[in-house]
Image (cartoon, rainbow, N blue to C red; front, side, top):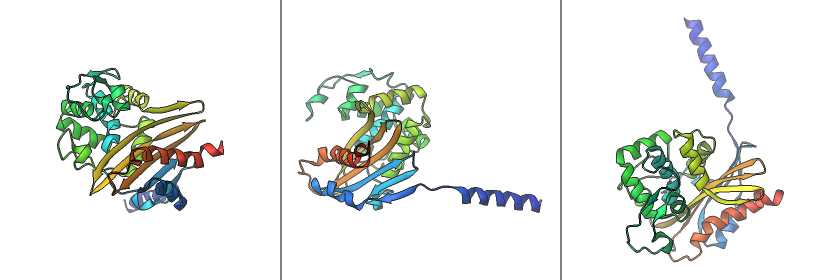
Length: 268
């Protein structure tokens, strides 16, 4: 019995010692991209082909931020999985409330609501899913801290849920690899509606997000790039104390493309 226990312990120790951690490269020079838009923040890229992270401002890599509209990725998956929405063409009628974004003031289907980041569509989707099912699926999917406090139609906008850049990348990786606890059909539909750019040589699937947290504006652009049989996951999280920064919305996306130009596209 003692020999068996000793043998088991030795095997476990051998397995632990063989675990491989991805390499990490820190790029302090990426600060120039954030300074250009007068924002702070962090950039995280995972290159699975080389099992390597490239990070700017790594202190934020594991820090939790409100997901804002990046939550629409998992919200879409849950809506499809629960049958609340049937497919990408599922329409929810506009409630006739005039909102600041003119694109929101019409009936929406899942495809247009994702593309236009239509808040009311996803709020209604979440109400139809309900609190118990929402919490269950967030726990199953290991999405951020899975905290739904703050109201079923508000928790990802100004409630208790938090997700880090590291967790964003991990979630996207499991989506790409079809390793989330959702049907293949649901994941395929969401991957399709996530396409932000499809050009000769590469496809980017991504989502923006914007909200406020601790007195700061928070902006996200998260997704992954498929480029000539190479794959890169990214999470850009920016912050500002200036709510009147007119470049803030564009900065979320532009910084990603400027960094990808340097890291990926210029090397083709």
